[in-house]
Length: 92
Image (cartoon, rainbow, N blue to C red; front, side, top):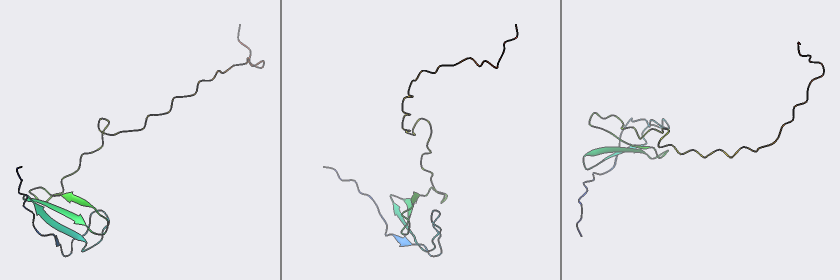
């Protein structure tokens, strides 16, 4: 079997960093995997990946195509009977 070498650096806390999800200070860990920086909040579990500029890489947004919605239950069919209103007179 072939083994793929994954370069990981030690996880380190970032002083003064604030979690974008829970706003806790000094709870963010940062590390690199194959040269890609990652960060994780130990308070709320928020994780994300950073790009070359240090900006957060957004996860795929939910759309009509990739968003699964439960299908609506079929409507019940019932008959409706209309009675003429004797107070209403048709103009003849």
